[in-house]
Image 1 (spheres, rainbow, N blue to C red):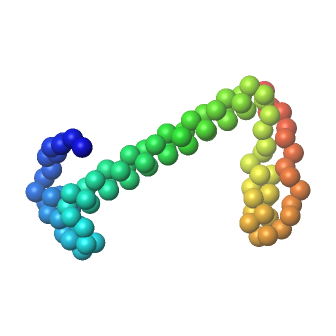
Image 2: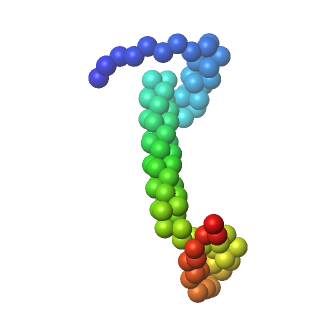
Image 3: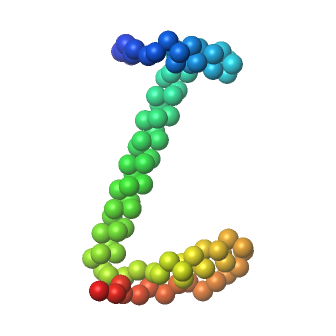
Length: 94
């Protein structure tokens, strides 16, 4: 394991110390967990953006989409436990 030095304002250092103490962990462990969570969050966001970009590229390429009002109805009905018919894919207007 390597060592990294970080500089933080005294107020933040004290907040981290207090929170770590309240959660029953060391300041070091708290900081490592925070960094790990932030890295995971950034990776998930990157994956989400990549998926969205790929799907949007497919929409542009195919010209096929589902109108929001139709999709919203489908999702709301599904959330209520109903079994709505699937929305119809349509070509986008030019």
